[in-house]
Length: 150
Image (cartoon, rainbow, N blue to C red; front, side, top):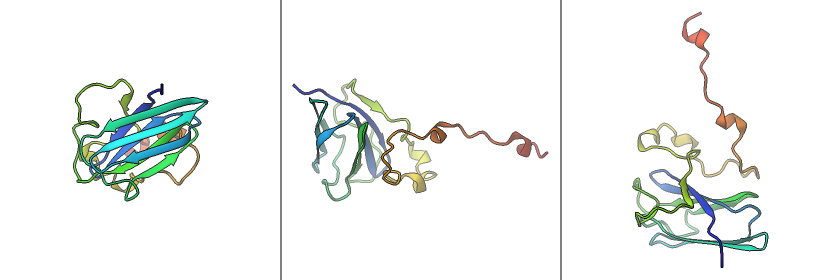
């Protein structure tokens, strides 16, 4: 019996990002089908993990625009949507899945997408670090003295 990994997801008009949490994953197999079927399997510490998702809409077949990065803590997938549009949810079914959560670090609303269009590259430079940098988590605090004109 295989376990179901935790999945974080975010989207842009043309892509869906999936982050699958399986530390030290080996024998990773990822498959995307045009009709929106995403499947994943891996082994970690002698335990089998698998996942099959029926995505909200169709996607481009794997190999064309699907990118995958296997890190030491998780697997990140960037899947190209067939049509450039925003999905109401990740899956076709409206049922709640406790192992699927929103990736707030990657999330972008429709109206914010044009502002962030230059910074939505799939993966940052191929570094092995798949944790967010501390600087990314820091809030931007403006220099209040400059704003007051002093």
